Image 1: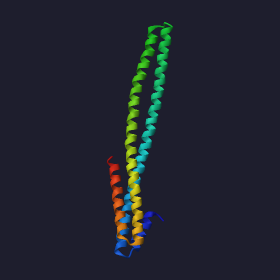
Image 2 (image 1 turned 180 degrees about the vertical axis):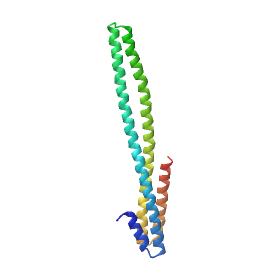
Image 3 (image 1 turned 45 degrees about the vertical axis):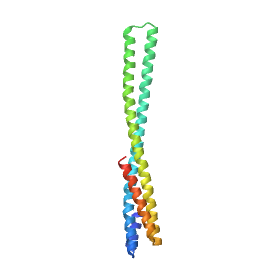
Image 4 (image 1 turned 90 degrees about the vertical axis):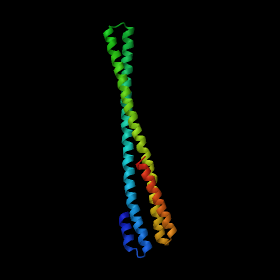
Length: 172
């Protein structure tokens, strides 16, 4: 039985007003938990995607840097052999072009890393928000079993903390 079906069953079978209030609160918190969980998954995927894009850019940067090095090596070799200035100039231009391209690639890789870091921060906030919402549902379940209002209040407080952490993650 899914969590939402179980919660609906609790709400339906609750006879006392306290049980109905707790069950309704649990249903609302469960819905919020589902939203927070989806958002955490979304930002986790975004974080992983940006990490992969940054890694790809760094690999591309390394390839361009190797080409730059080889062009400089060819330039040095041709200079030692006293080759035609036009041949030396070609490799000098290639080395300069690869260096400029490398700087652009490096800038793009850093942008992907910054986006990854923002997504990572959001994931952490949502993770803790999700944790508090889950604990709140446990407390509310205990409140129904024990018929104790302080446990219900503690569950609601934990839920509010979880919602606050998740909201902080959303606007982080």
